[in-house]
Image (tube, rainbow, N blue to C red):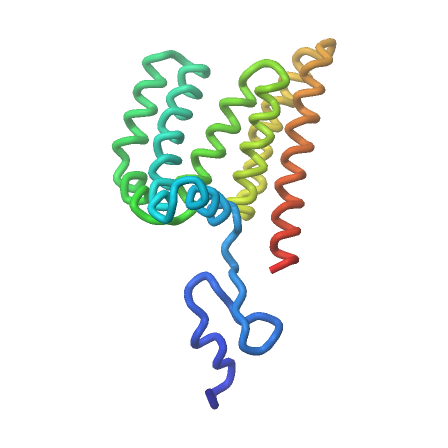
Amino acid sequence: MPWPDAEWTFAPLGYRPGVEPGTLVPVYPAGLPLVMAGAQALGGREAIYLVVPLFGVLAVLATARLATHLASIDAGAIAALTLASSPTFLFSLMWPMSDVPASALWVLALVFAAGVGLPSACAAGLAVGLAVLTRPNLVLVSLAPAGYLLWRVVSRPSRRPEWTRLLVVGVLTTAGCLGVAAIHTRL
């Protein structure tokens, strides 16, 4: 086209002109598309439409578990019902966007960070890594589970497993950040 920056005119939402003329590259993070690709590989094309609603279920369950851990079973039930009945949350469940998956992964990271043992720390670090892959702009949220684990280390300095848990979460969080960098560099 004859006007300046014509490539931008034809770039759909979430894409921008690439370095090479005539190419478009995505600007959305790769986390949710990778999960959707995995769902499609496992369950066919229709399975991709279940990804966000299933993350919604996970978000409600993880919210209930976290509130139960922090307060009481009544608080867990109230937190889960509040989230599940939120109009914004319900509206977001209908769209293939990363809002609900990122929320579910961050709450899940906090649930596992509050757990005990190395498997729980691995799950927390994996959830943080996936959350960073899904929404890299929220990488500073990773300070919440890390801060909680650091508080546990400081409050129990003689307990070596707490240091190990913090290290595992840190390594897996770093892996998520490096994954984002590698994917974006490649694309």
